[in-house]
Length: 247
Image 1 (tube, rainbow, N blue to C red):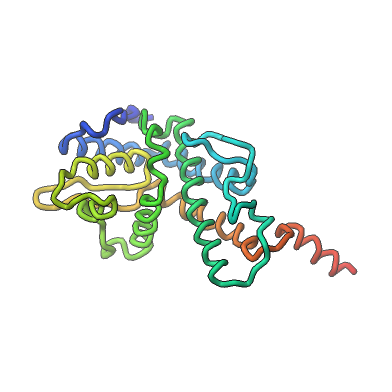
Image 2: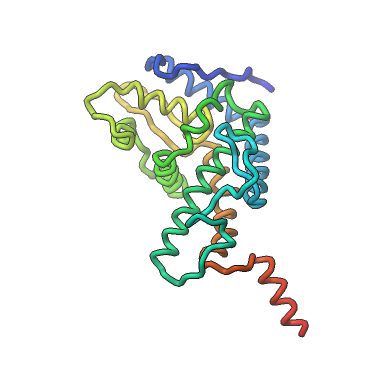
C-alpha cells in the first residue's frame, strides 16, 4: 500500500479547524487508493450477501450479531407481515425498510471495512453514531446531488449541518466540524475544507455511493416483495408458478 494508514483522533471534540482540514485531506487520499477502492467494492458485495441472508443483525461495531432478522416491521419478520392493500400502511412499511437497510447495512459495511484495515485507525469507534436518522437524511440528500449533474448539484455547507443537528447558528461550529471529520473517516461523506471565504463543501463519500448503488438499491428491491404481506417468500411463489405451468 502506497500510503500509511491514517489515524482518527479519539476525542474529536478537541480537533481545531486546521487539524480538521488536514485530517479530511488525509482521509480523502486514503479512500482514493486503488487497494482501498477494491476493499470498498468487496465490502459492498459482502454486505449485500449479509442482508439478503436475513438471519443476523449487525453489532453496533458492524460485526455479526444476534441470530435474528436485521429488520422486522410491525413486530414480525417480513415474511410474516399481515396482508394489506392499505397504501398508507404500505408506505410506512417501505419507509421502515429503507431506513433499516441504511442503518443496518452501512453499519455492517463499515464493520467489514474495519476488519480489513480499510478504514483509518479508530474510525470504527464512530460506526454507531454514523448511521442514525440524521445521517440517513443527509445520505439521501447527498445521493440526490450525486446523481444529478455533479458540476451543478448544490453542495451542503457547514450552516446546513448546524440546522440538521439542531445547533444554534450563532454557536461554536466545532461540534459540526467534528461531525464532518467523523463522516469522512468512514467514507460516508466526502468534503473539501474551506479555502479563503469558501465554506466546507460536502458530497457523498466513496463508501456511501458504493453502498447505495450496490447494496441499498438491490436489497430494498428484493424485500419490497414482502411488504404487501404475502405469507410465501418470492422463491416459494416462483416454485408454485413453475408447478402450475408444469401441470
